Length: 145
Length: 145
Length: 145
Length: 145
Image 1 (tube, rainbow over the protein chains, first blue to last red):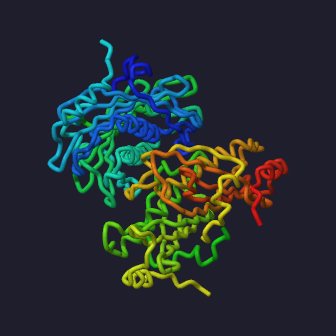
Image 2: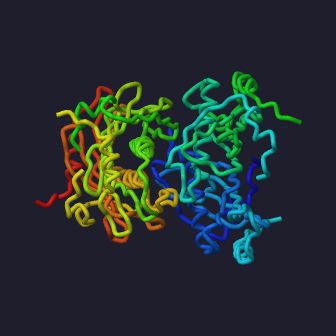
Image 3: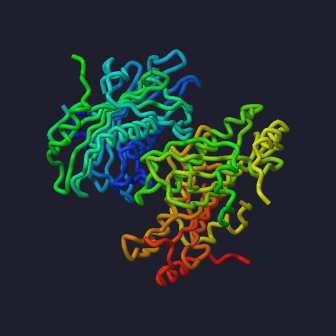
């Protein structure tokens, strides 16, 4: 869990953003957005991003399974402000892809999230369809060198 | 997000375990334990571990803030089986520590979780009290070479 | 929302009980089990009750839809104590039934819950199968006069 | 749990509305907004209403405790559409008050909710301050005869 690089905290680095409302229930006894709730906010923002890609599931047997989620919490999140969840594609593998996201409140990056998703059918992980690769590539983040 | 090493999937590697019930509400539309819900199950199991350490907060201003959570999902989790959350101390830093956890269902490791916690007071991150370091060291996982 | 009658706070009145763990995440900023979280604890306990009845769904089109939930909060709930959720059948209607539940911590009733469920297929609400009526009748609570 | 009267399903009857986003996580395995999640959406909408009233807590010992929540589910709720939560004051008691709310999606009332809140200090339930009564009265729903 190394700290995120500076460009990960820049909303301009991401091709897609969604504003997600926080709820009072996202707060924990410390009075800030709970870390698991933040994972939920990322799930919602990331979901809106991947929905927007309209990647069709070839059959009912196709499932996208989350293989890994790694979140860095950089500042405390608050309610009732919404969070802006910015997302884009990080890595594109043979059978999986990674979404890079960052959450902002009042312009400050409060957390970053990497999510690895595996493409499966009933035999297990299988190769990404070409259309997926093409679509994911369109939304790939240009990682600064 | 590299895959966890083999020893991370061995319950015997961890000094503390807690059985945490799953709830029907932890399931998502894919019919398995949702990834955010699994983060919640880790929160509960890790919380029971850290509570068991009885590390006193010197004042109301002392807060433990989660700085990072990294989860690998290795197999689908199910309901109504409980999960066994095994935990121990990974790294001990100057102002933070890391808990390593793993979740088991029916003896199979379904996920691993690394959680970094920073020790803060109202000035920000500060040095861990000596008693903390001593207590954390007692529950340190002996990482195989 | 009239207050529950005395017998509703007596665990002995209910034919089924389930012990449901509370989670730290069930607490809200007031430091007690949040009222929505309590609704979730009732969902879990009630679900274990209705699962135990093994009432078969004749087809995929059959769905049980919750039509109403009414909860009285009688005392504050706490963590890490579990809650015991006691349940039984209240009313049995033509196309619906009501589960009466009560939640206990340390022997004290902290809340009661009435849940009305409607039996539906793709045409909407339909008559309860005879087997359902028979099974529900077995677990009917003997309401004191 | 009698069915709500017709006026309860009319957004125009309520003095306050809030648009609350739904989340994918609000869905359950039936593919609709889960009934407990709907309770959470009501909590959020009602919270925005009561926050808007700016009723000051005289001291830290003053707490508003939820005494009862009664929800009627009238139609299935969906995602990703937001819900509009309309709220107003129902009854004003000596030591408690009731908020009447209704949830709408695409103009259709999907659920109604009555929430009773008790005003307490460390001695238990106490009389509502006069300012509370005056403020609540301002937002009282004119119940049709």
